[in-house]
Image (cartoon, rainbow, N blue to C red; front, side):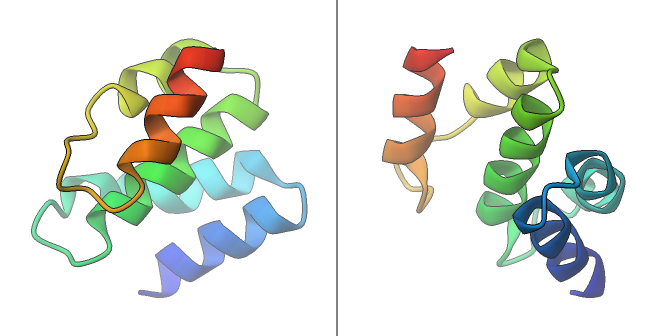
Length: 79
């Protein structure tokens, strides 16, 4: 949980590189209740870091059941 909150906080204060470093290792935790949010915030961090290809790749993995699915689809369309 610490890595998740550290990543979200880093993103909120404009440090997307720290957010990527904190959230990327958590992506492998597919059974975590935070997994959809990890994908969402990591995709935002990639985007803010200028890595739109990685952001698009991650955004395209959202499914209908994922909580931020609509936001992910909208951002993917903008990128």
